[in-house]
Image (cartoon, rainbow, N blue to C red; front, side, top):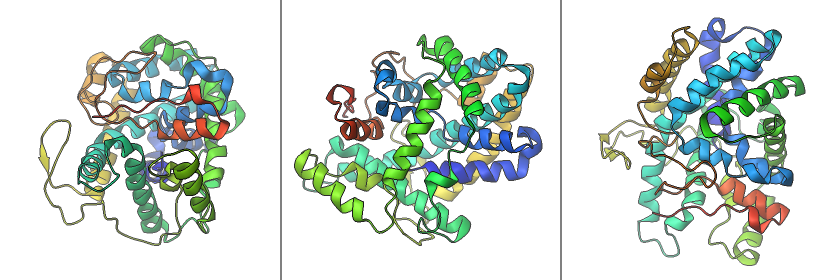
Length: 351
């Protein structure tokens, strides 16, 4: 999703303060930051047609019971060779960071997504939730980049700065995925699935890179006219040259809003949630690395909510069905369109 830079800077902040906990080598740092993208690379498996059985796996993992995932992730370290374990541990720590930020921030994103889709704007409904969600997260990305570095994508290329990792590293993490998908989801992916997903993600980031927005206009025409979509998903995903310290969606004025999944009221803004999630992530990593880590401690970390911050329901590991809210399969939809594979397009559920 567009939050690729938000997750990356979140991880860099955590790493800068806790490298001793995560691992000080360059490989461990790269693996940790790659872990901060969580299961998101799996959305891009649709660029590799032989991975068809796993096209929905990214969505399934986002909706699955996270405590099971974390327990299986911890066990997956046992399948690694001794020299691979430090990289595996660092990746797992990053994965925890991704979950923590996602589950903390998504209620704010979904609250605004649903409000916009329900606002009575002509031609905009919850069927367009993927595009609205992407617009919100893209703006967060642009704000975070400019806040952290005072730069925009004109001289900061996400496809070069993010998703780093050697083939050996990807192979080791691929072993972990093969194990914990089998253990937690009863899905049996090949060991090269994760490597293919990350490389596809890198390719797609290059396709999305268009600081002068030339490709935005082209994609908008193709998607809305030729593919008969209401809005261009490419345009909502592609970062802009946007030097801004604020976002229309950041709730910096701390207005009250309601968590759409729990009904709880809150006044937190983006940076409140971002900073609190970093503290929570460090505590979660410490608990995960403890020798006594088990299902109960995993449940304490997750609080029973999935990556969207929604209380967990059981999810079918093949279809990913059960959730009522719009799922973030838009990247998979667009990639499927790029390769012309109609059968690969997962349909987003509607509320």
